Image (cartoon, rainbow, N blue to C red; front, side, top):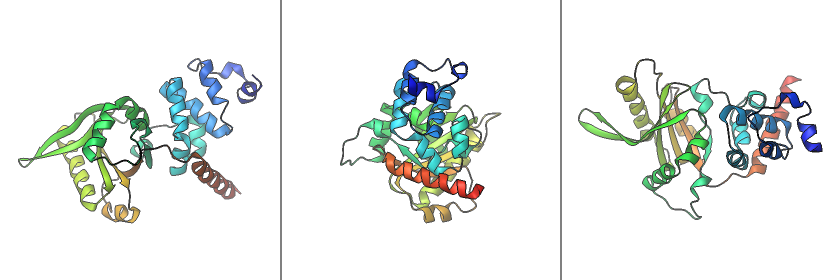
Length: 252
């Protein structure tokens, strides 16, 4: 109760959306910035206690803060989705698939695992995603192509196309995703829909290749990495602390 009072001294400001179990999890977080982020996310996304524990264990705040120059904003408001880059993570964590180490899975098997665990996948993707289809078939000049996974984002009002790669992303993969995005923009979008977002998820990512392959290409095409196991939280925390120090130096 003492820790609770120190973390939440003004009881009138407490949200009715949080249970006592939520608060018990929150007071375990030492960092005020991190605790504030999860507090806001519970309210914004209506997380259950189980979902809160999962997001804490996957280091969601640390992953978002390490990849975006929005540390203080994240702590104050949670993750706010206003533009395409707001919903994309540098690294996605799929520990909920429970694939044993060492793992060897094909792209088809990875896709199947994600669909079989769609609830966990949607939680990792974030708020606003609705599932549309798997191996979504499109026809261009009498040739059939298949988009691995198609979602619709109800906040940004656009399709989100996801391609899965078990190895490094090649420049051809980026060109193919750009083609998919062009097709959806012209053939699938309804009135009021915004341009589609493309996300290529790969085990590894060559930053320089991606930079050159996407040169002057649609800014709504993203390449992110995925990992099948929980991240090293301490390493993420050290990276965040380094960024906070840099942020303090800039202010002075």
